[in-house]
Length: 251
Ligand SMILES: [Zn+2]
Ligand SMILES: [Zn+2]
Image (cartoon, helix red, strand yellow):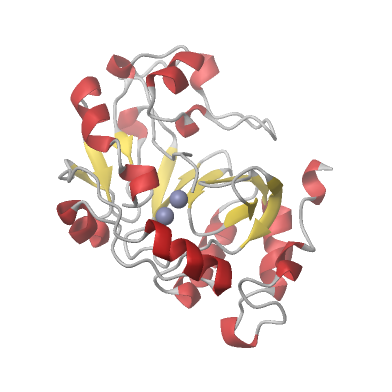
């Protein structure tokens, strides 16, 4: 698991500097994808004090683990979906459900990793608009990876989708722009249904927590042959053939 993050970062002022606006660039993620580390923010030229909201796509240690420290420095509200509340209260990944052999092996490594519990100041409910935090976008509840997973659907047609799916294998190391099942899902059929909701609500770039970014067209093509019925999929989770398609938008 790498340390990619889907933290929302926005200025407190309504007038966001243009460089902070979501970009249509294929390879440059929007500012929201900045990691919560000081170095990640510094690259974007923003300070912790500029943050208006810390929005987590879900409560797993690699996306949520530094929330307490960031919130303390930024002094801004924390938001996540309440279906992940029990994970946040315990400060524990829980028993991860591995997808395929690789996922089951990784689940033994990353299950039950702990982090500091954090209460939500703002509930990231389905349909919540983020205009008040300087972002033209809407929260979409996308259960499956975890019960409280969400995507941030930007009005631009792009989206930040967390771990509903991922790009390639091993973060950015192997075919990062090719859609792939994530290694873990509490409920994989639900995650695929959530992916359908994301596809219906977007048309551009999908920023995933690991690997990517992914092109809508590639994900739609991948989805057409993967996981309609997960158990009868021609390429079940863990099959290397899952990587045989996609990536065309970046080539
Ligand atoms: Zn996760
Ligand atoms: Zn993750």
